Figure 1 (spheres, rainbow, N blue to C red):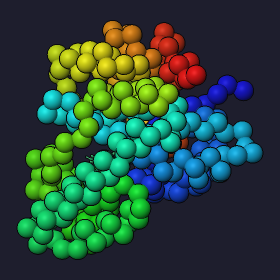
Figure 2: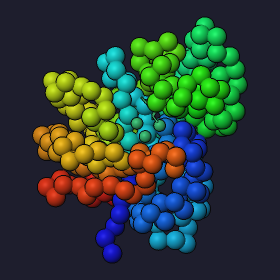
Figure 3: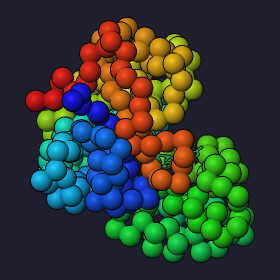
Figure 4: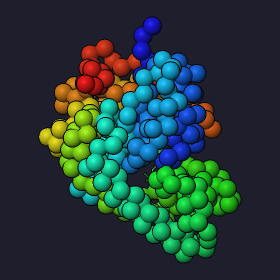
Length: 277
Ligand code: AMP
Ligand code: MN
Ligand code: MN
Ligand code: MN
């Protein structure tokens, strides 16, 4: 039986809807044989996922999706096959939790200026002890009938340039890649086409990423077409990066994205899992 990899998904320790246990069970039901849990800026779900995966055939890979800053822009770097208890990485995670809490306060203040109250209490409760994300704000706006959908919440309030957007400085890209490497992991640029960079800026980003020790790039994501796979694979070839596959699954309510429902990696691309020690 060939392996079925899904190397990017979220639990309710960040902005996913399922517990780590439910996520592992759903992955198995979808035929996934190797799963990386990659919550935003936290490895807190790994322990529970590991227990859920024990005595099953599912290989669980410890991961994280780090929010990073490069120049004035923000990017996501997936760390795969990391030591989830690596101390420098945990210190970065503690800093990111502070950054996220402070950002949440500012987003809530901006919503109050739009006469939308109670957001901070709601997202703090919803995130529990996990990371507060803009998705939590989107869910709050939906459930209080300020918007019709998560997408609408981003389009009207939360996306860059909208009234409740707060520019955030995350840890530097090169430092973040270094922490992933030091934790024994492989650093992968997440969903490269979602940043809408021109080819010139994409090249600058990828050469800095590579120089910092980045080794992979996501090529197949949960909702991508053959042309997008080709474009991402071209970046991998040009920069000699390995290719990753990950659904970026968040919730069963999104019918377009499912765990393990992924096109195969193009044959000429080196799979990122060959780099796992
Ligand atoms: P944050 O890391 O807190 O800025 O939240 C980012 C998360 O919000 C992403 O991981 C997505 O899950 C979600 N997100 C970002 N932009 C959008 C969008 N335009 N529509 C829906 N969800 C989005
Ligand atoms: Mn997310
Ligand atoms: Mn992302
Ligand atoms: Mn993600």
